[in-house]
Image (cartoon, rainbow, N blue to C red; front, side):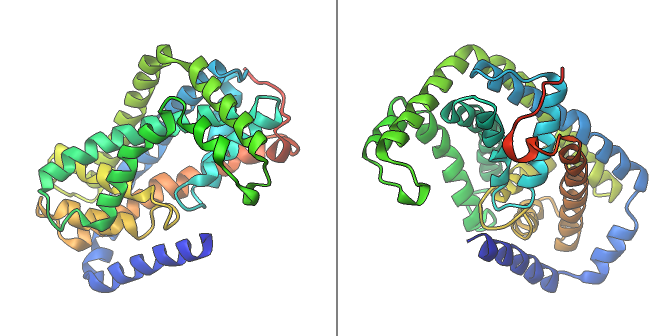
Amino acid sequence: MPRLARLLGFAILAFVLWRVDRHALWDRLRAASPGLLVAAVLLNVPQLGAKAARWRMLANRSGASLGFVESQRLYWAALAIGFGTPGRLGEFWKVKFLADRGLAFGRALASVVLDRLFDLCLLFGLGVVAVLWLGVGSRVGWAGWIALVLAGLSPVVLLAPGLVSRVAETARAPFLKMSGAALATGAAEYSGGLADIGRRSILPAVLWTTAGSAMFFLQCWLIASSLSLALPLPALVLATALANLVSFLPITIAGIGTREAALIGGLASSGVVAADAVSYSLLMLLVFFVCGAAIGALAWASLPARSRFTGSAGSAN
């Protein structure tokens, strides 16, 4: 599946590049402002730092004991892994790290799932507004509809009281090499982690999510400005949110291909031609994924060698 997913993403990107005006695309990229792009790259630090602080809060309330610096390093290292996996599933490496340090697997999973859900819920809300803004038409595309449905169902499935436990009691998952009893235990731990995190975590998590997302959309505005794209901010935010939601589908890595296709449709109603939409998307890939992965790789390298695989690292506050 991962290999096919990677091929699918690159195939979509190749098709998009074949259809657009490549001369116009190259001219637009060459004219991009380096200063604005550097500013966008530097803002990765506070943007992702806010999200790392959110995950630290959720993990600690689930029973972990993460210091500020340690949580930042782990979050960035996990991002580097996630950027290279379909749907950024590699970010769930944080679960293994916490579990190997002694936190129950289900509790560790609860913190990472909730961390992902806060971003998905924001993107879902903006995605719904984007659909209403674009109109219920072909511009949304099949990937957009699938992403919206999955994002909308995620909180229902993952947070429904007792659902995980009921599934675990009847599950048979030999591919996980876990017995029904082990799955039931994991489900109970997961439910316990959710309960300990509790409603009192919602407000601070929402505040951290808002701070990180505001920084993200500021970066997007800087990227668009570097290309001299005259876009109303609401149009930029909505089209980018829908494209980001689509990039979470586990059919590609780093949103390659799906993001470009979604932005072409999403920005068309604002008068942005395909070549300009693709240039914006490619610079997003550079700023958020290439540069973000580079910083994440440095964070990974800064971890003690044993902790990269076993999770046994000392606390750093």
